[in-house]
Length: 231
Image 1 (cartoon, rainbow, N blue to C red):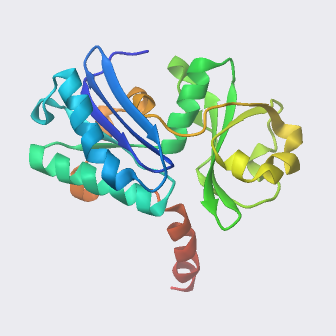
Image 2: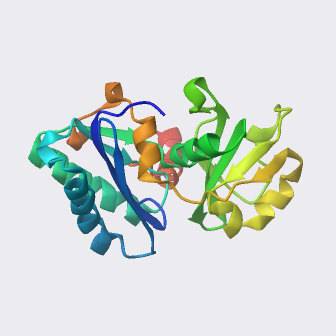
Image 3: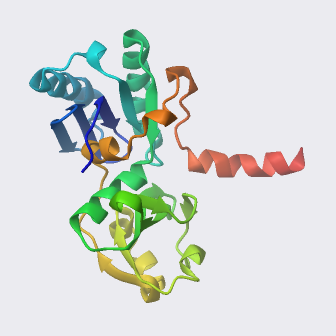
């Protein structure tokens, strides 16, 4: 695992409320899987990792945000807190895919080469991200993240290898795995993003100003497409 700069990572895009801080060598993480409690849990967890690591907010180089896709409310909680902290401390924010964070943990803890991460998007859909093992054993996207219904996953076609599936979406909609069984090999036990893996995926060259954060609202983007086409 590569060395970190001083970063605080936050993700509340799923059932998990997860935060971590790196001081350049060590990582301190808090991870709680408790639905509808993110607002209550997040700030005490952030204070806890900063205190334990001995890193002050003003010592940080940037804040790493798990930017979804995921729960609309959850993404807004993490984005708002990240923006507030970053603005007050004069920091930029590094957005990282929450789906890719799941894939990164799977790649680090298994021999999987291709990963399909699905998180519950409700309305019989999942947020889907497909990845291959890339340079440094980090996830390399092989398709854009998108909303997938309960049907054949077209992005699987053309791949001779089977995919290891991860994420809670496969448990929420087991029929999706059944429909696509010919492309699926193993099922990982990794269900939700962890902040430690956000740190692993962070790239300081992608840091942006807090005001420029745009959470990955995939459903909103899809809803806007018809209006774009008519204009």
